Image (cartoon, rainbow, N blue to C red; front, side, top):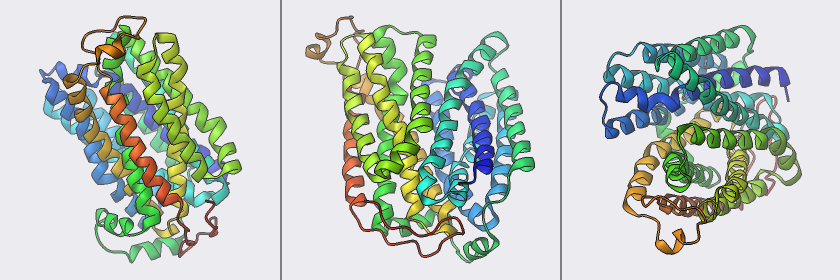
Length: 423
């Protein structure tokens, strides 16, 4: 594994996600300053994920044809522009434009994952993918901690300006320090492939060893987004948390995810293989979801938080690694882009349904009766139960897929020799 390029990729993704984390906690507050309704605020959040759904496979596909470095550089510069528009927004339309542009250019995660696939050997790939995940986790932990004070003491526009500066720094770092990872031979081969990359989903779904993983990733993201989107309401109604206390819980989750991706994923994947590790991580998430709402008090709840967080920290790199190892090198970007696209679609669709379930189905009295601390009448546990069911469906998809004998990819890069399936 070539460590120097991975460190640069980690820093560029981390700086970019740090900017994203600075924006997210204040986004709906910023929207209300322009008289946005709750529905419009929800659409504002969804616009980011919908743009990612469209553009993640596009950037991945283009990176297969022209190389990883040009796409990472372009998207980081585009993100700086999008954050600048956010900081200068004077009406709701500009805010929508800024978030849509951010979704377009932040859809570069598949390119970063493809870079990792280019420069790692199969046995070290999960550790490399874990570095990308760690950059996400740390960005989500530190971003809100920086963006909150900036928004409070300077103005809600200030995190946008700071994020624009950070993305510019990441872009310069990419230009100055990142080497191209894709060989001219593989780029030339990818250029012969025609058609819109979204259409490649049909081809990918025709390959059972890939289709199951793509479908599973959608269900995993959809289920987790139930928790992610409803956590502020759940914590408010279950424990009386305010915005700051909710932020601390999110930071706690981010630390647990980062811990899993720094200290666990590399060691465990080498010892057990990504397939067995993924099965174990999924059950951690499903069980953790149910223990969240069953916890009789806050301390027991906090004790169970790492189950889901570590499960997610182990799952995402494992899925990306398995997809990468089952994909020819000349279409790494396109295929990983499809997985990120489906994840973005799940994040766009899940919050609305979770919100409807939360408002429609309050917690039964027989459940509320076991709580040692009184919960608000509007508390609902249904999104947590439903999220666990969705991920359980994903488990069966993944189980079927992982039991298949996987042929070696048709082409191999200089750093990615074909390997037998570890299942």
